[in-house]
Length: 100
Image (cartoon, rainbow, N blue to C red; front, side, top):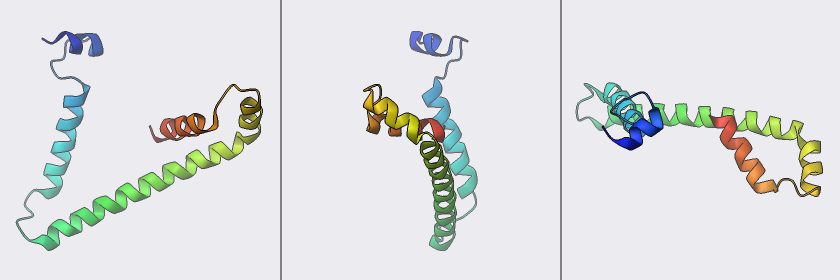
């Protein structure tokens, strides 16, 4: 067993996080495209649906992050002028934490 997996997971799993993520993604796409054949219209329909799901999820999460940022504007300005936070890393960290 790989020592890095033991250090990361600590539970003795043979597959690390990355391999589990790739496996789950592969199974998801395999189920979506199973039995579609070689017709491009069916594949394009699935690609369009995946694009809509991704766009809707991304925009919803971005709007939540922006409303949080607007609510914290006074705090952000005060802490920026006190040189506690830089603006760009704070905004990026806010978006990343809201996405997960």
